[in-house]
Image 1 (tube, one colour):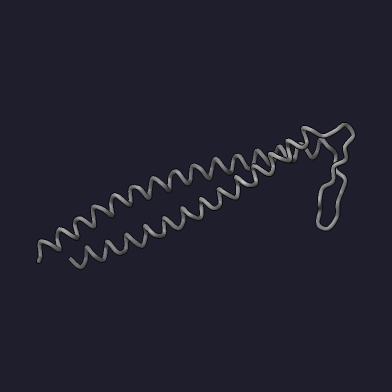
Image 2 (cartoon, rainbow, N blue to C red; image 1 turned 30 degrees about the vertical axis):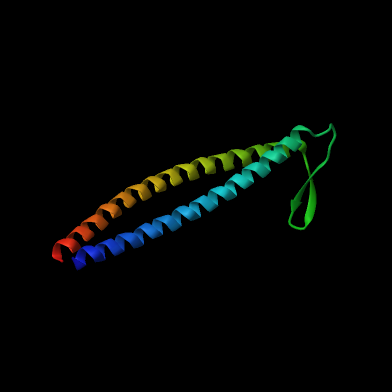
Length: 122
């Protein structure tokens, strides 16, 4: 029936929206992973610092001297934050993937119903 077809079209639009949203979440997670890897490299560099090494931090256009302990603490906090965000992102993505699978199954059933009622009315 036309009403079923219209409902199917609306559900397909919602499904496309979910897919786009999931894609954005994947991109966001990729950015977090890149930040995590970068921050991990910095942490490794700190672990291999020679005694008495000087660390500078870029503050706007200036390079400002920063204590080794402060720098290590900042990197550790940043890594903890990024890991937390990654965990949160993974949970959101898992939920979205589940929603998309359920919506996909529903769309398949709806398409079958529309096709069946189309065949029945012919």
